[in-house]
Length: 246
Image (cartoon, rainbow, N blue to C red; front, side, top):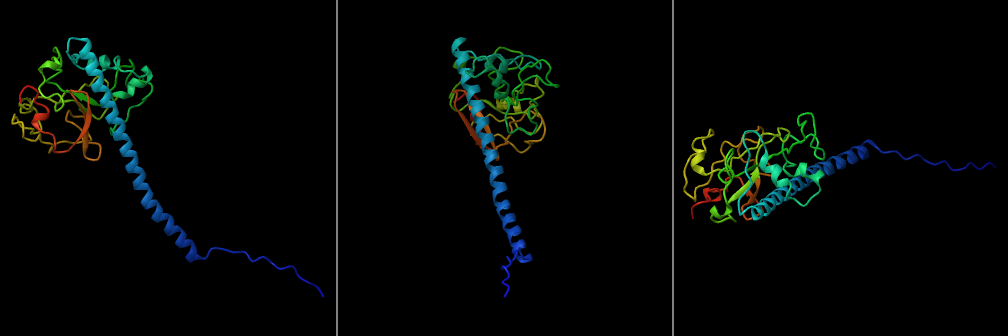
């Protein structure tokens, strides 16, 4: 009598089982991918806020060393204020190139750790942040912090232009609202402290001079007293930029 060794039956996925697995994978991907994107965006917002906090603190340290005056903004396309403040930051020099650029900007910096690039052959500071043009006017002497009423409520610097590789474009757009009347975009010229600054024409895909709400509808800022925070679009009032009145 011959005994045959039992044969091992090969198990295979049925079509229904295979489709079920594919469906489960698709559901998991639909859940995970948006979550990963949201976490990534939150991380960029946190890094940006940290950058602006360092900018604000560096401005205070500079003012403390210079009879309470802020650094001059520079003239023309010279990003002088950023270059000046970078020397007051207690971080390695190699990292300073990225401090003035928001990681959430739609146009990424070409070489974050190396400021030298094809569009930045001189290795100068590259920026996506802008300073308050009333406190640090282009081509003129910066003001003393003693001129600022309510420093914890006045925006000193904020998310601004999109293209960090345009190294010379140093936007100064956080101005007295009376200046807004002469600018395009219909921002208006009221100086009523309680009036909200219009964001109706704000567009985050160009390189104009308005504040940029690129962090889930919020703009990161640093205030004159050095603390950093975020404003939701439509939340900023004239009292956040008018620095010489109660």
